[in-house]
Amino acid sequence: MTTPIRVLVADDEPLIAAGIRTVLDSAGDIEVVAEAGNGRAAVEEAVRHRPDVALLDIRMPLLDGLAAAEELRRRAPEVRTVVLTSYGAEPNVLRAIQGGASGFVLKNCAPDELIRAVRAAHGGEAYLSPAVTRLVLGLVAPAEAARQREAATRLAALAPREADVAHLVAQGRSNADIGRQLGMSEASVKTYVSRLLTKLDCANRVQAALLVRDAGILPTAEDLR
Image (cartoon, rainbow, N blue to C red; front, side, top):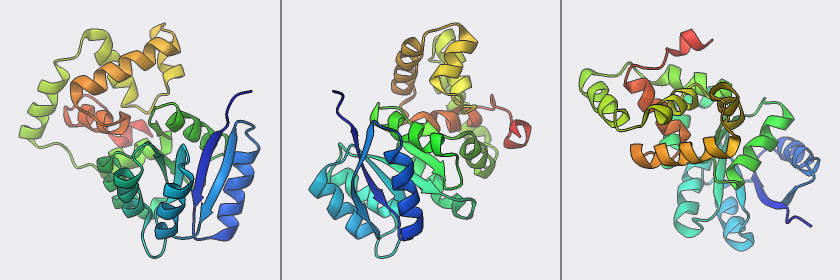
């Protein structure tokens, strides 16, 4: 029998937390092992239960979700974090990206998207919903000339197929979508993504997407709508 993915749910709104638990319980391969109503409790529960994935709302009392994620990286680095956000918290999304969160999901997403995000984080991938991709890219100011040159130089180190994969990652495509478009297996895409993240010195797919944007390769957020 496959060991279920162990998840911590942290949200200060009991109704939302209950809804998240219901969605995750329906997946079959996910088990909610702990819940918390504030960021401080989330850290303590994660340290105690050592879940595979921590779902953290950004706006929580005592310690916000981003600060909680940062503390978890120090005290329980094996726990992967997925940030739950809303359109009212855009600047915080960039902070989460810079901090290396494994996933970014809007609270109004479809239930299956939340499940995919947890599975992706558990599997070592960074999950970024298409809506959040557009949101993040829309927040990033056009690259200055020096930053654009630096980004282009870093991307030049990629092999042609790696560059193709990076461009599609930057559009928020999943590994399965990339595989279909490039005629590759999903496992091969995962290998390419891991390799290009190492070459680009990026912590996750979102940082790679921003690097592609800085290089002036990716269409603007307006073009992606």
